[in-house]
Amino acid sequence: VRLVESGGGLVQAGGSLTLSCAASEITFSLNHMGWYRQAPGKQRELVATITRGGGTTNYADSVKGRFTISRDDAKKMMYLQMNSLKPEDTAVYYCNRASYSGTSFPWSYWGQGTQVTVSS
Image (cartoon, rainbow, N blue to C red; front, side):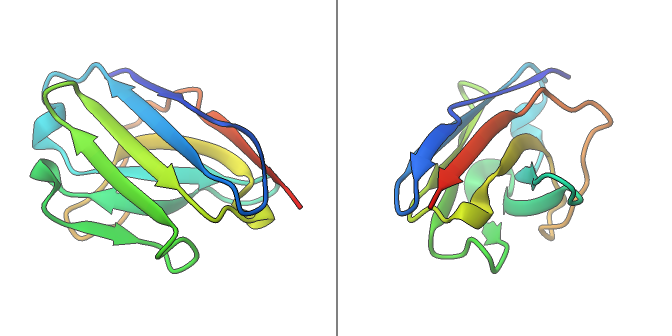
């Protein structure tokens, strides 16, 4: 499996970004997926998940109502629309597999991630 994240950048608080994840996994459509993030000095955390087919999404309380996860299985792509960004959203964002119940269940491979920096 190969995962390539993109779309990060520097944005002011209150701004928006859309992250993209390109997957090479041929069974991408069969997997539940998620967006994870890791801030400096902190453990990696799962912020949003989407089931295969896109029928169910789950969000961490810290991003609920501001972030929207989506996927396009035909293109093997996943997205994270981030609105009303806060300085505490600053982190490196990664895509990876998740569980049906919305918990962490990543493949051992991690992409390089994409840096999101929110200035106050």
